[in-house]
Length: 130
Image (cartoon, rainbow, N blue to C red):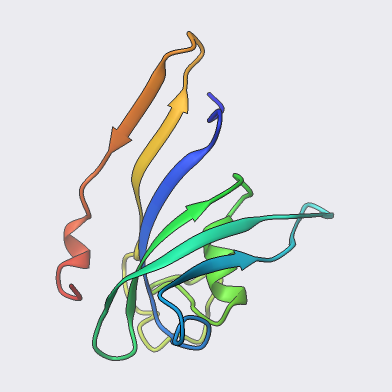
């Protein structure tokens, strides 16, 4: 099933203020390379809450469905996702067992041309930080 149009809202905790310190919302625009191709991609972000230890709770909405788009955009913009062992190796919290990225809302049109809306609560491992 392909989202048409894609609408995916995620929440994550990022461990840096480099990119987002002066803005509460913005867009990550980076060309992403995957399987030898370089493709345009953008992800809207909004700071929902500033947390202790330079952590930020973000709402993210990718405009396309590139593989690992959210994780790569956060990493490339000096705001790696907490617990991300693939895109941020030097993370003081890398011993986290969980990746702090969560798909909170998915909207798409299914094969029968019916709109499908899925909402999910945050997992319990987010609670200790929020």
